[in-house]
Image (cartoon, rainbow, N blue to C red; front, side, top):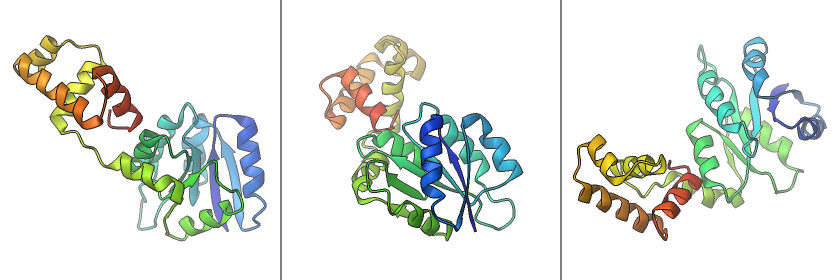
Length: 203
């Protein structure tokens, strides 16, 4: 029997997904929202945790999963499977950072969902073909650490002079980093570079 913890913020969708998974007699499915994840995992550790990256609290769930998924004594621990969209590379990057082993296109067919759960529970990995390019985009960061740092500070509203002071750089050097970030992201301007970098999960 494979145990599954389904985490979703929307109760109707949570119940619908649980019904779909429960059609497989070899899956034991429990459900919760973000607030119940830690208690559920501590009281009844599951083989698989499934969550939807479109949920408004998905980042918190991924962060929590990262802290809970470490196996305590030799077993594989709980595997993370995410429902995702191919046009949200940033979400895919966060899931990758959290150690996700299954990536399911939420707009794809539903008839192989249980099969994927079993595959991941057995130690395998799965990435829907429609998500592969987005995941590749998410993991290939074209900006240097310094360019990312400068762009992140600009995203927080810092001026060129304040960034230069904080990083002990000349203002011209900061402008060069920002120009490089705009060029490498293919953006129109600084704001567009910030937007694209956030979408891709680089910031």
